[in-house]
Image (cartoon, rainbow, N blue to C red; front, side, top):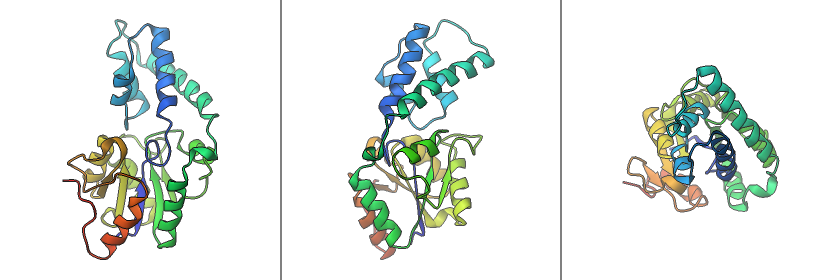
Length: 223
């Protein structure tokens, strides 16, 4: 049934959520803006500039567009610095083995992420050059829940959305996949989201889901 699987990066293949939080928190503290993990969760799956707007909601200061770009660049510089702590050990055996199993099944594999640091992260965790296609925040004008990043990934694979399964951990990502005509599979924070076609409790379950879909049976439907 599926010819490819397109993965979100952060929260699906690996996790740099803590780095994002620490970088945004450092900026918020400098600006004397209240910022906690609940605010950080609202930033999941959206672009850097949209994440900044979430942070600035509690600010008493109005910033120009140029100042906002400078603030976003400041946050990103801190995030990139923290990314240097990533190693191949941050790619779990479960994810590595499942990716290899999917490839052995003849599936094409791609990444569709809003992060502009996608390629850096993939290199650090040992997946640089592994995927058949990568689409990230550098390639798009509209972030999730717009489907653009997944559509770019499918185009680079040379496949229609209807034969690609998208794996996401954010509701915005599930909505983006659905809007683009992809089947969606929720995992992690999005597991159980009613809009997803499938929901997984563990990454390793993805292999069985794809096998069942190929044999014409339903996987673990979410809703």
